[in-house]
Amino acid sequence: MIKAHKIRLHPMPEQATYFAKAAGTARFVWNWALAEWNRHYEAGEKPSALGLKKQFNEIRREQFPWTWEVTKNASDQPILDLGKAFTAFFEGRARHPRFKSKKRSKPSFYLANDQFELGDHRIWIPKLGWVNMAENLRFKGKVMGARITKTADWWFVSIQVEIPDAVPVNKPAAVGIDVGLNRLATLSTGEGVENQAFLKTALKKLRLANKRLHRRKPGSNNREKARKQLARLHYRITCMRDDVLHKLTTRLATCYGTIGIEDLNLKGLLKNRRLSRAFSDAALGKLLNLLEAKVEQRGGQIIKVGRFFPSSK
Image (cartoon, rainbow, N blue to C red):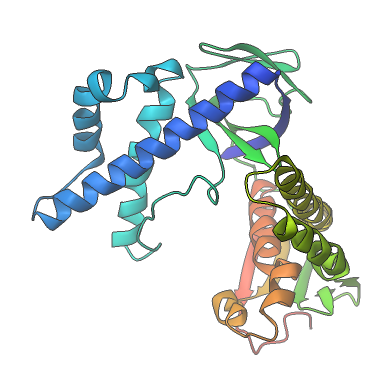
């Protein structure tokens, strides 16, 4: 199985500039490939990721020489990712791929396992050198690749590692779980876990930060400071929510071998205008995804029951 470990990076200013340039290159190549895919498709041709990659490499040195200033994966991987995105679209698993905006899309780029090296609290990247990491990789196994992303003005690396599949463990204990808005989870044992509603709690601060941002002059240093403050507040809310979800799901997956959960229609719940924010704040989808993944990793099983069956009984 593949597990990922997300680690905060501490780049020097020139290294952060390199990251931004690599992420910008990846975004540019994605947009170029999407435009070419659409053009080929409208002309009655059948585009492919490999064909677009060959087409890009033929014109790259002459038309886009600046793409050579960063790792080759910043140019190669977006085209392959676009191919996967179209496969998911044609299979009905995702919507049509969209162009990536410089302002709205999250800066990121991929590194294949032959394009970086891990050291003691640091990672080596081609054309850049060693970059400090907040911690070492916690998983042991074959390193498959990594993706560097920027969130709230901080850079992170998410390293994918292949580890042995879990051996089923005999845990006779079983539990049923109902999830909701007032109580995040209600167990068949009678235990309840309250929904801390971090977004609702911080809503006043978010509104003030948002007003502060829109009052600043576009392009000014003060507007950039306000943007960073708002992004950091959103990130802090996400971290607090994730901390609760990870601790809860780890405890449940460790204590119980079989867990019955409600088969929720999350997309339908989010369409409810009055409750969509509350459902997003509770992050029920992430809770269930984390629980399924952790139970599987520990050799347990998840049983999904109908929405009208009281799974906590």
